[in-house]
Image (cartoon, rainbow, N blue to C red; front, top):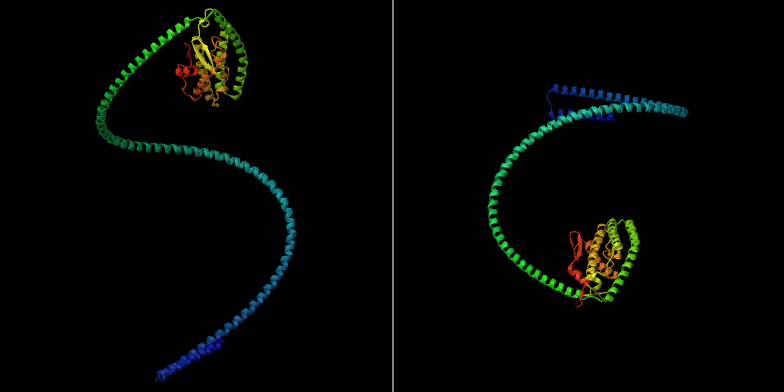
Length: 444
């Protein structure tokens, strides 16, 4: 096919040359000859090219045949190699088994060798650690030296900065001082103006205070005069009432009652001592240490009171209580009772003693952070502190002691003075509250 294409190309060239010759219509014979020569040359060249192409095609055919032969030989060789590989695989399996045994033996040897190597490595690591420690120490020393140098440099820099700051501060201080002087001058002017105003106000206040002082002094003088007059009247009444003596039979009756009352009171104190010890143990169990200390003090006062009562030698014949007529009456529990000035004094003491002990008990519960309950206190249940056994019945004393105790407990627990006052560490009921509790009524 390639040869036919070349022939067609040659014929086309010849035709084109002839057409060119015909178109130009040369007149010279030389030009025709040249053209013929050129045509022959081209034909020769075309023939040579065709021959070369034919030779190339033949060479390619030979090469392909040789390659096919080689591929066949290569395939045969590969098949032979596969057979050999299969045989080798069988041999390798046998060798692997042998190798497995060898490996197990080698592994044992290697483990032993590893143990030895690990021991050697541990020794080496220890040596390296020692070397590292030494190196770290050296580094630490170097760093410390470097730090010292850096600190020195920093100190120098800080000094320079401080000097600069000091200069700046001095400049600021000068500026501020100038500003302060200006402000002080303004303030002085303002203070002078305010001082003049305050002086005027103080003068007015002093005049007002003087007027108030004069008014108070006049009122105090009037109140003192009224109190003196009332006290004089009360003293006159008491003298008149005390002059009225009781009969001998009434005196003997009172003395017998008093003796029985004292004996009963002594027995009662001994019984209360046991109950008090039980209550102290309960306080210790509850860890109420402030209440525990208060009750210990209360019991100590009761013991002193009991010892005084035991050693006392009371003279009934000379005591004015037993021949002084009643001058007051009071209501307790819906019933009226009569007493003289000595019995009234004992009832006042009952209320004041109750308030004092109640205040201390309430304060103790507040210090212990215990819930407030005045009835839980042993002093409230006992209600005998300050009672000597004379002049009034123990039930009356206990009642009014508890009335004072309840109010004192509220003040102590709430840290206030609503019902009483504190004078030098001594607690007592306010006069108006005391008169409301007792509510004495004069018989005449």
